[in-house]
Structures are given as C-alpha cells and as structure tokens.
Length: 357
Image (cartoon, rainbow, N blue to C red; front, side, top):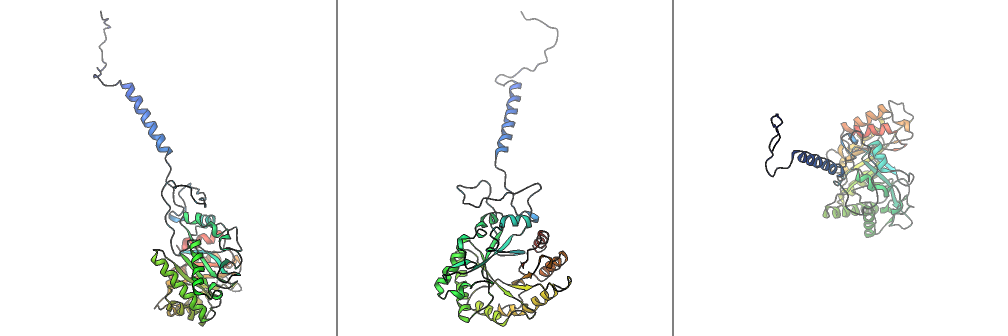
C-alpha cells in the first residue's frame, strides 16, 4: 500500500525512452570539453613574417625557419611567393667578406625584403663563376641561407662582376659556355634577379657576348614561365654616365636583352657639410637620366633608375639625410634605393625600408 506524504508531487513525468536529465547534462559537458581539446590540438595558422608594416602580429616572435629540405609536407598554408624583382630599400651583401651574414635575421631585424649578393666573378677556370673569383659557387654560407629568407617572403639577387676579378663575359670567350655558366648560377640559387656590376665595359666583343647571353637566358625564362630581371650597376659622376657605359647599355638593348634598371653608384662626399652631401648625388642622377632614357630607347626613364650612395663611414648618412634621400627616391619614382660602403645603423635602415616601400 502506497504511503501518502501529504505533499503534492511536482516532478515531471519522463516520457518513455527519454534519458534522465542528469545524464543529458553530463553528456553535453563531455562533448564541449572534447571539442575544445580537439580545436586546441589543431596546428595554428602561421602568420607571415611580412605582415602589414613589416612586422609580425602583437606579441609574436617568429623563429627562423629551417633551411634544410623538408622530409614531408609542411603543416599549415604554404608561404606567399617572394616578389620577383627588387623594390623599396635593397641591402647589398658582400657574401665573401661577410660570411656570417644571416639574411633572415637581418630581414627580421631591419624589415628589409630584398638583398643583392655579390660578387660572382671568373675564377681560375674562365667560364666557372666563383664568389670573389675564389670561393666555389656552392660553398658560400650566405648564399646557402636563402631558403629561410624566401620562406618569410623576402628574396635576393646575384651580382656578377664588381670591383675585384673579371666579369664572366670578359673572361669566357665561348658564347655557349658563357650562357651555361650564367645558367648554372641562376639555377643553383633559383634567382629571379641578376645584376651586372661593370666597372670597365671592355671591348665590343665582350659587351655583345654578355648581351646575347642575357637575351638568351631571358627567352628561356619566358618559355618556362619564369621571370629574370636584369640590371646594370654603373658609377655615376656629376656628368652622368661615361660614354662607354652609355654605349654598352645601347648595345645590350639592341641585342635583345631587357634591362629593367640601371643602378647608379654615387659616392658621398664626406668632406661636404651635413646639409650638402646629397646635392651632388641628386645632380648626378639628373644628369644621368636623359642618358639612360636614350640608351634604353625611352622618352623618360626615372622608374628605370636605382640609386646607391656609397658611404665612407656610418656617419655619412644622418636621419635627416635619410629622410631627404627617401623623399628624392619617392618623388622621382626611382626603381629602388640601396647603399654601399659603410653599414647603416639599424634605425636608419628600418626608416629607409619603411619610407621607400
């Protein structure tokens, strides 16, 4: 016989087949917890090294990517492809004299995206390029650290010629072997940009041999869907380019080679006052502009001119002068800006990188 308590029974009657409420609540808690753990275990999306402003996100401290070959597919999205041609501020690296230079770390420190590595010249074997004419092509530690830089969205080009040693075209008289030598260097470092620093244009045969090699390599790249940007680095004075350099540019273009830019090496006069050091450089660029335009068959060629002041000391470029240099570059729509000689302070490098981007 049921016992009567005198209190009304307020409990809801559970429908047949419905699980008890405590069991439903417990199952919900377990499901939510499991989902949170699964999401936490998923690989986070990598933030590109080159985010807006050239910095990683707040609180981020990107580590250097591995430079060795990957044993399997990498987790997360693939990095954005590196830009194929220089722009903004370009840092030149003497890969022979600075073997410890770390491209990725410098890019992270100064926000530079583009580097030029020099110099590849003819070694003991005339048609074999070597770093500084001495070091084997694959034996340079700076050039061998390109992978981390490119994984972060930066890039670097190769400079042939330079102040020491012979440029390959002057040493290698066999056109087929010359093309093969350039091709090997470009392929070894997957270069999309090469520069020819010609201190002496030499004879017409050398100029024509180099020009035809460049044209052949650019045609090969086009057929394979690649780009190959070519520039020439030449000294400039108050009178502009030398007649020999102007003729070399004309002959190179006539042979079918596409010259993207002429990089002007302009020494800074350290003896001048701080407010006057840049005036001779601006005058030299203005003198060279019509010469470059005529040599390249253009009516105007400001965007085909790159500028590289050569510093005798780190104090040759103050913050105010850096600001004026960046303004001159931007106002005239120059292809890019660089420096040579004495190293810049990190603060000025970061400023020039941001101001010319």
